[in-house]
Length: 416
Ligand code: PLP
Image (cartoon, rainbow, N blue to C red; front, side, top):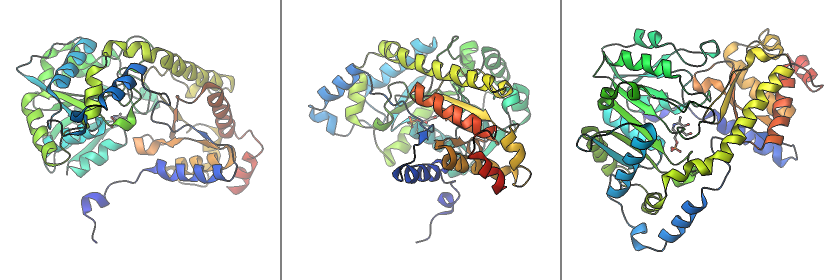
């Protein structure tokens, strides 16, 4: 069978290969510290679980939902977004579509917007699925560079320089995966100001980590400063992160009615409506309880974020440190560490992160995600959801490895 070029061009997930290696080593008795998790390792809120159980008794939970989702749930989601983002969404202008996860909502949005050759701007570091989704829709991802020295957020004038007559959309992801930061209010305001000049460019705001902000201020968005931008904005969110429910697959998009109708048309011929049982349970869930549920989780994320900063400082690596404030990741730039300096004498820069991740598993059992797939060379992503004691130990081993400290590291030196 001949596979389509569209699919052939999709990058394979690098994490899968690393996880396979970790699983193999674990089965051989090696202690593995898996810092790759993109989900919270907790049970969802109790009352949400109770509602799921209760709804499991109803026939309607097993039947098709309307393609765009149950009307009362869509209204509830719009109300939640209005209240939590402190914005007003006129019922006559905006609508919501419920999809099978945030990822599906994003793919639908791009599917409904992007024509072949259209450019979609993404900001480094970006969630690894964006370029693949854009290319699948025959669009062209345009990457705006930003690295550690830009605080993982490209200056707005750099974004402006890359806008062209082909720009169809810009994807903003704040709180950000993989950097674990929210873009500042100043940035959002400046970005909003710029976008007022481009009413035809769609602004896709991926807010899947909105609730997981563990330092004040809460994430802010360009449309809060300039509500007129809402007419060109698509807000994407879901329950994967905020209700620790990645497996239930429920996300949604809120946007101009015309776009939601177009997505409904697409969804109607592809996946149909999202899971009825989960939709009904989410409808019953009181969203004002999210904070109470997430508060202890946020403390945990804060603790691990503080810990990594302390361990960097204790090892004289403060220059690699920065303050994360949301989502659940830390992106570590290792380009200036003794490990990188030593290795770069013999291996190519674009191969180094993969080599580090692989050697790290073998020598220390620590598994991290290479930053290349997020458009962030010479970085790795660590997940802060790991239990604190294990996290501390893993980070210690990892940093010592980068400092060529532990004895096993000598093997690495000899290898080079
Ligand atoms: N957007 C970002 C930035 C993410 O990190 C993820 C998941 O990891 C998603 C969207 C999609 O989440 P889901 O499809 O589980 O709702």
